Length: 348
Image (cartoon, rainbow, N blue to C red; front, side, top):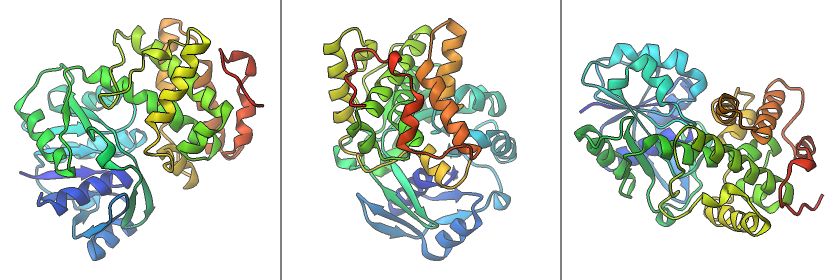
C-alpha cells in the first residue's frame, strides 16, 4: 500500500514521523525544499511532548511518481487550487484522499478529486513548526482521548475508513470513526475559529487568549456564532474529544456564560503553550486560512440571516495583518465593539 502525506508542516511532519517510527511506509511531500532536504539528511525530528528522530522518505511535489492508495491532505486550503489538480495525476479510481485540513474542506476537495474518492476528518492535537526538519508536539497525547475523528461524507462505515483509522492509530491512540462527519467538522471549527482566531488576532498563545478577559469573551462569542451557523446547516455540535459539551454556547444567561468560560479553560488546559496555525502563518508573512475558517462561519451566517459580527471582525483584522496594515497585537482587541458582548464581565 502506497501512503502519502501532502503538506508536511507541523502536523504533517509529526504524523509522518510517527508512521515511519512505527513501521509504516509513507512518502512525505512538501514544497519547502529546505525542509525536505533536512528530513532527507537528518530525518524528521519531534520535540515537545515527545522526543524522537526518525529517518523518513521526504520528496518535493515534482518528484511524485506512480499511484498512491491513500493520501492524507495537510496543506492549507489556500493552496487547494494548485495541490489538488496536481494530485489527480497520482491517484486512480481506487485511491482515497483523506483531508485533515482545517475548516470544512470536504466539499471543495470533492469538487476536484471526486466525491467517491474523498473522505475527511479532524485532528484533535496541536503542533508547531520549529524549523526545517523539526516540529514541536504541543499537546500531551496521553491526556487526549482520541487524536483523529474521520468519516465518509455520507456517514457510511466502509472498509477504507477502517483502514485509514488503523493507519492513523499508529500515533498511539484509537481513531474515532464518525457517522456524522460534517457535524464533527463544525465542532472542530469552534476550536479553529474561537481561541485560534483570537491567537492570530492578538499574536498570543492559547493560554494567553484565555487569561485575558476580553479575548476570552471574544472567543466565546465566536463560538456562539459557529453554533448558530452549524444548526442552520442542519447539524448539532457533538461532544468534542468525547467529553466536552458545546450546548452551553447558547449564551442565554450569565450562569451559562460562566460555564462556557470554564469549559474553554478546561478544554485548552493541555495546550496552553500552543498557538494557532494562522498565527504561525502570519509570523512567516503568509496568507492564512481565515476565509476558510472564520470566513466560512460568516458566509454561512449570511446565507441564513444570522449575524456574525465577531467572526466578521476576526476576518477583517487578520486580512489587515496579512496586508501589512496592522500587526498582531493585544491592541487589536479594541476593534471589537464592547456593546456586542453578552453577559461578559470585562476588565477593560
